[in-house]
Image (cartoon, rainbow, N blue to C red):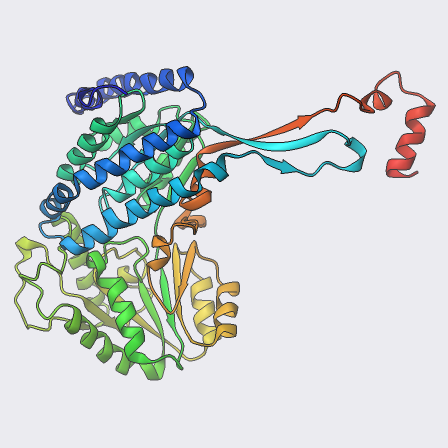
Length: 491
């Protein structure tokens, strides 16, 4: 491995030129070519080498976890320490441990069946590193969503180039520090910069590109990648619905929904975006949600457990959604247990329920990505299912019902990237489950074996036996092959 400063030098060269798009592009190409040369020198790292790299990443995360808490807190204005440890550190370490536990098995060739016609030949699939993988990370979980894909790509034997979000600059610097201490610039490189760097990054001829972010930006990333026929994994978002059945206990539903919605102040791609609730349950669930928020967050303004909106632009965007909903007739129920006047400069926004919503409201058209939660009444479960299916396919769907048959029916008749029954957001933390979207909410998946396969080339291998009948189907063709074809296909 190279010295700790080598990757930092590479990324500093890019940061120094972010004001000039052509220069930024040229610098990125130099970083990329160093990674490509590293891959050519070591195209298929051994199991032992891959494990060493995962160990190095694990050590780096543990070493800098306290710095991470402070970096993310500073980037957000306030981010709950416990949420950072849970979402950025614990989940990442769990993912690395899962990779290490299963890597040897995943790397083994897989035998495939050979039809009697071709026997005694054999067939198998072998897993090879793709080469250089690009990772574009978002701001909402800036550390985990940069290093999680990096870990999977390293496990698959690749080199990695990471572009952290410019909206969380302190965390981006820490990502650079962690990775440059652990790896040389020909193995993992971090590049930083704003939109022009992101655009140039997407245009590089990666062997695979993973992007986590908005659907709008995902389209641009995919368009840029298409110029190089670079395969992409897009982890996007959308409006993830939560359906509550009339038989489910109201208080329990409220607790789990409020937890999933208020975690990171709703700035989670799989947060419940709107609720579908039996009409008779709207009032009691509204009260129960207020009580749940009060239990979790007795105060908001100076409460270190309640996370702030990341910056002024996103705070104003959410205020705009709220004002638009009010103007169009929504009833606003603010969950502010202490009755505080929240300082806009601190970007804390109270969890807010929206009743009497309609499709004309922007909050029902756009992904919310904040602590606003519309409640939509339904009269029959069929109506709720139709409501979901009439809209773009979401990244997640949540269903609350203790009847397993009904739950299976809802899951089979709706399409979403992932789902939870009687819970919200927890499926992301299950390391062996694939994580990904479908349609507008994304394409491809990672985590668990799917992550290893996403960043691997599955090469089909046919191995001919020393004694074989291949000559029987070779020219010159005549009566012999006519008889064989008649036996094989008839006629």
